[in-house]
Length: 306
Image (tube, rainbow, N blue to C red; front, side, top):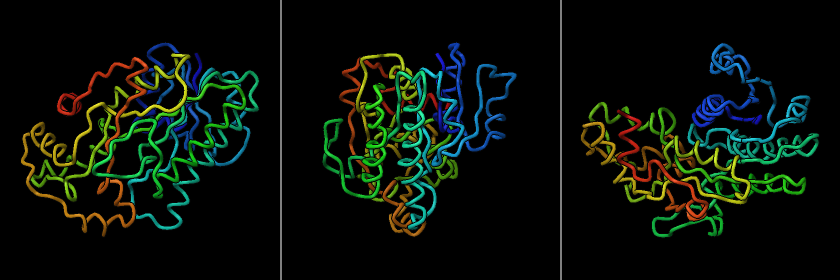
């Protein structure tokens, strides 16, 4: 099939494009930076990849490229864990998701023929944070900034159902792979200065990159999948456990905690991303028949780091 992907040059998107290309599908990459995308997916190595420049929050001729695609995977969104959450930054985070999804749905609605399915990203930030509660796909939303972003994001994606298009919303946990969050956590351990962040009691709901890509592929191919699914491993851990396991895999000590005030000084309100968490279980994902390659943290880290 032909699959359009936004956010294709990121950690998840680039692995997804590789898999789709390897399996013989055509891929339409919607990107803000076509030069960079061509370096990530050189035509000699990715002859089935077509690159189209787009402005995520603006209607335009790029939307015409959606016609003829059987599926859309919408991964685009400004990073939430980088820099302080100023008023302007918060608006960028919201717009990139809410308006960006609105324009994708607009393109799908106008397309003839229409795609059959939209796989849209959301995040486990939808549930808010808690050290004691357990969340699954039936849990109500939180009321902090990230929860409000996820609500607006999912509401825009849900409008695609009015066009008769199947919708799968994947609420991503922390993705573990070569890059992303893990790349920021490893350097202190390599310098023998690793340790838990903040209290260490906060939950860390994670997923291995390969499992996430497999889940996206299942969502594309399994016509009875629709609605919300948690894209998290079935065994979340607390930050203390994550730190200890990471130290063991890297053969480094895990003894030097990073105090909460240091993270708050660096990130301001954005510190919530690492100082607070939520225990999220993939109830509907397991019920869908999805089989995890990496349900437990240590084998996942071993595979990535060794």
